[in-house]
Length: 99
Image 1 (tube, rainbow, N blue to C red):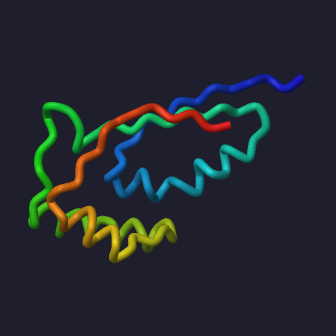
Image 2 (spheres, one colour; image 1 turned 90 degrees about the vertical axis):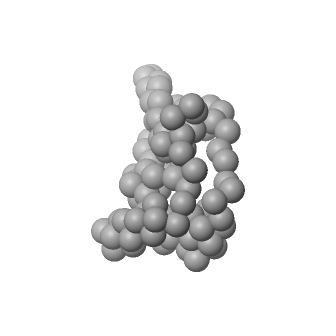
């Protein structure tokens, strides 16, 4: 009998390290008996959120390039242009469950 393991992963949708960890999460999903619930949360949500500005966008892109070199995850120009540089994106957190 396989024991079911429930894992809740809280992540920031705009966190480069969270994105960089995606292959590890995909690997976890290959394990029998695992139910993964992902809940977006973080830096750019809620009353403490601040608007994306050019300075922070440049900092984030630089960090994302470092993460890409370490993890192999690709941060696309579409992401750079439409998320980091748009200044208008908003994320509305909602729990998701996979399995």
